Image 1: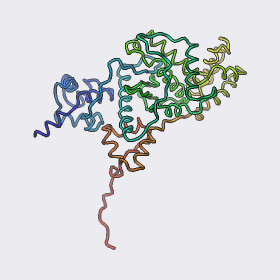
Image 2: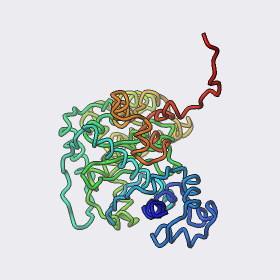
Image 3: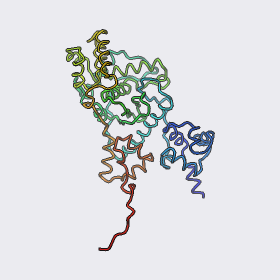
Image 4: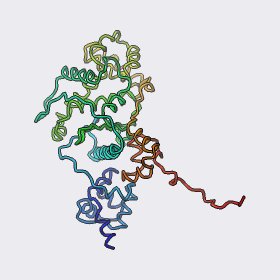
Amino acid sequence: MEDRLKRFSSIVPERIKMGREARGLTTREFAEMIGVSHQMISKYEKGQSIPGSQVLDKMVKELNLPFRFFLKTKKAAGEDKTVFFRSRAVSSVKLKKIHEIKLEWLKEIQYYLEDILDFPKVNFPNLINQKNFFQPVHFEEIDELAMTLRKFWNLNEGPISNLLLLLEKNGVIISKVNFSDIKIDACSEWDENGRPFILLGNNKQSSSRTRFDLAHELGHLILHRYIKKSEFNNKQIYKRIEEEADRFASAFLMPRSSFIEEFVGSSLDFFVLMKKRWKVSIQALVYRASDLGLISDYQKSYLWRQISSKGWRKSEPFEELIVEEPVVLKQAFELIINHEVKSKGQLVDDLSLNREDIEELSNVEKGFLLEFNEKPLEDNILNFKI
């Protein structure tokens, strides 16, 4: 009896809240699911009461999380920690919280794997000095910073063949997940150890736009590393830093000098050819040409009308040429399993997360972490003697 009480007293209250918010549930919705009052849920999450065995069993079932998840100590994050969201519109607090937690779980997975394997070192220059308050960066300076980063990574001024792989090799941990809210394209943050993490949505039909999202998040990591959460939540500042991240992405993917040198026409067919070479959307190419003064406002408006009439605002041609997938975490799991350092069951058990969540965040195939003995067994256990 004493061991049982000690076991349940080990429940980490913050994990109950994290599990609920990860599934997008309010306290009332969660309370109805497990048959208690919403006041009791609040007490569980604050550590003022301990859920009994039946209640905890319902939590495990309804949240689709293992029992060990609720025993795992949650690392305290700084109150002013900033997570950058690339959003076309203001998304709900609930949906942003879901993705913040996915980002936390991604970090937990990487921290665990890093105890076993050597990951690429973070190879980022410090291009922005820490300031006590947000100050806008001029667009011309952003272009220069983008070129400085290219030189730091030994890139020429041509197209980047695989942006995602480039970032992974320089220490960024990246995951593609199925965001439940299409308004959120991506989110990113620096962790306490100085490693950058990026979550990308995989529900976009346009691979070229996903690539731009990735460069946009890189812009945040470079330009806005020291911005405070209170500043990020300021609407005017938020609008400005989104513009700055867009400009950085554009300048990093399409350097000024080489882009101008190769720009020899302004027809839509010419922009299609440029897309094949630069691996960015036709719309991004039009924006870049306009920013650099290569096309007039009239030409820009005419191109937009053509793009709209062809239905290319939602789906552009040649997307199949640009697909990029994360490989670092996938390779980590394959190495550990193939060299029999850990079994699939041990990995899932150690990480104390739902298997499907681990597979999604690590970009491995569905069912990859299933142990052979988790698969249905044949019920015929007798045979004739030979």
